[in-house]
Image (cartoon, rainbow, N blue to C red; front, side):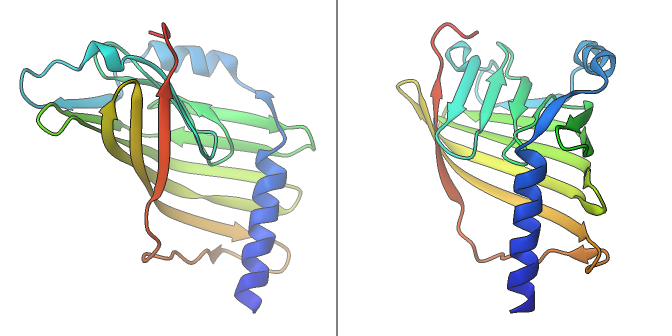
Length: 198
């Protein structure tokens, strides 16, 4: 029962924190990072060329997912379910919250993999570190997000799985690592490409 109460508390903190994102604190850091060297590893079987029809903005039907692929298969940016934060690979992003909170997200190297043989697209999105603070409550950690599925007729039907490492710190709980249910099946997310979004 105590764990259930803690989980509910954590989810309410996350909803309060992430539902109230205000703006970028450091716009200069974002623009500098976007100009920096490539931070997406692209793997394509067969001819090694990423399909041009997959370049553009893809919007998921669940959890606010958005992914923008370039013509070469690099991931330009994503909107993460964790906080609905828009971030690019290798970027460090500071955010302010309307209610006085603040946060930081540090993205790592990401991977795009496409198989012509299987007609399958897979991505790995790595957040090396994040920390969000609202008053004395803190949620921090890291996460790897995995999306894999078939691409057909302007759609991408994926299975989404996460490998999270979340630690919550409140007045009652100090450095409590949230439990992970490894038996939870992947979530189905259907992406639709926005026409002419290359």
